[in-house]
Length: 138
Picture 1 (cartoon, one colour):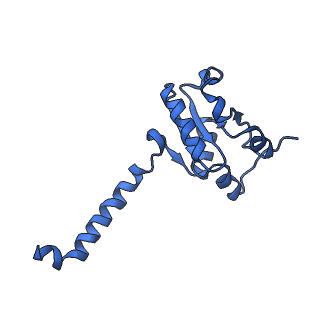
Picture 2: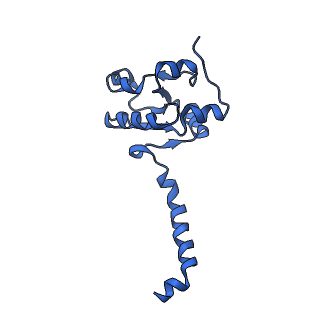
Picture 3: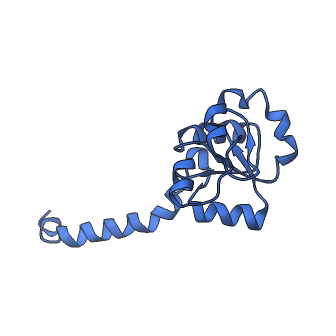
């Protein structure tokens, strides 16, 4: 016990270092789905030709969305999975406004055996904050 008391600072540093080493593994979000930053999302879209799935409601989607995004509101996703069947083995980037609905949508997709599901960390708010292009419906 005396050793612990005398070396509390060193023990704290060792524990903190261990946590920092584990952070990359903890980056996985809902159900082990990668949580991508905007720059990682752009790389996935450009290099892997990922499909962007927007799970926001109709009004949010019309107010601005990622170029070429497929729109299926979260409450309709389970019934409309068959429209995404051809992308089952391809990378999919799921986004919503803030990130919460994306996590739920990723769970639905993973349970339906979609292999390469990712979600956009911070959702459209992060995309817009990064000043990345969006398309607005007329």
